[in-house]
Length: 440
Image (cartoon, rainbow, N blue to C red; front, side, top):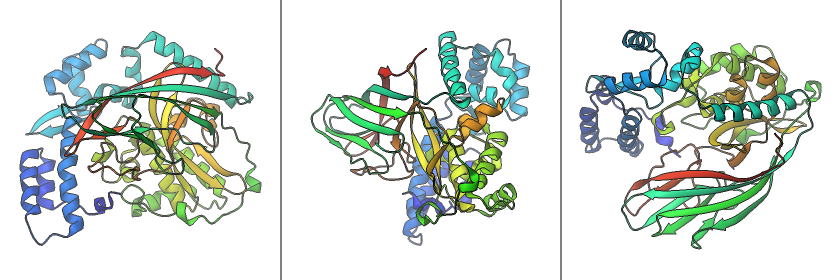
C-alpha cells in the first residue's frame, strides 16, 4: 500500500513547497497531472501529494500571535524574548505558509521533550500524574521480578461521524487474539449491520455501512504481562525471509541506515544481542517527539535516523528497519495503551529469535525511562499488560477496502470513515468499563 511513495515529486513542485507557497505547489501539481508523459506511479504520487499537503497544513493551525499566546498560557513565566529564542534554537515546530510561520498543533509539548527543564514549568493535571505514578510502580515491580498478571479488560468505543452526508462506511479497531492476548469477545454493537474482520488479517476492524452517524462497540479481552527470561547463549539463527525484507516507503535499507546499523551492531553475531544493541542505541540517542500525521512523511525510519526524534511508531519503525538490515526478523504491533484510568494510541515492535519465538520491544517507552537502567532495559524483551492489540503489521489494507486515502495509512487506532464520494472525520471516545486484575 502506498508503494508510489518511492517516486519523488518534481523539483519545481518541491521548490514551491520549500518556500511555503502551497497554492502554487497545488496548481503546479495539477499541471503535471495533465502532462501525458507521466507514468501511472508518478500520477498516483502527485495525486497523493495533494492529499498530503492538505493533511500537512491542517497539522499547523496556529499563526505566530496565537502560538505565542498559547505558549505563555501553558508555560509559566514565558515571555516574548524567550519564545523567539526557543524558535532560534530549533525547539519550536513550524512551517512556512505564504512566507509566514504556522505552528504545529502540539509544539508546546515538543518544547518539553526537546528541553526537559521546561516540563516543570508546564501545567499538569495532578490526577493524571497520580495515575501515571501508579502505573509506573507496577512496571518497576515487574522489572524487579514480580510475578506477571493477566488482566481482563472491557472497553466501550463510541464514535460520531463529522459530516452532513447520509451514507457512511466506518472502520473501527478491534482486538486481535494471539501472543499476549486471548479470549477476545464482541459484547455489544449499536448497529446490527456490521462486519467483523477475521482474526488473521493484519489490521483487524469492525466495519459498518449505512446511514447512522453514531456507533458504539463494546468488547472484552484478556491480556498477560509478557515477561521473558532469555539466555543469549541458547539463541540460534533462523530464516524468516518474510520479516527481513524492505517494505517501502518506511522500511527501506538506505545507505545511511545500513551504515548506522553496521556501526551499532559492529561484530556481534548473536541475533538477540544484535537487536539489543539496536534497542540500546535508539533508547539512548532518539528523543521522543510528537509528530504530524504519518501520511505526511515520505520515509519515517530515515527521518528518525537523521533527526534523532520521533514518537512511538517512528521509533518502532526504525527499530524494525535496523533489525531487518542486521538479519533479525522484526515486525509491527500496535493499538492502544490501556490502563484503568486512561487510553491512548500506541505502537511498538516485535523481533524473533530461536528458540524463544517473538519477543516485544518498546523503544519509546524504554527511552522515556532512560533515567533508570532497570526500567529502560525492561522494555527490551518484556511488555506491560496495559495494551489493546489491533494491528500486527503496518501499511496493510482493511477488509473490506476503503475507496479513499486513509487518515492514517500506517495502522488503525481511532477509526476511519468515508462517504460515497469523500473521506470524512470521526470523533472518537474510548471508555474503560472494566479492568480486572489491577490492584492499586
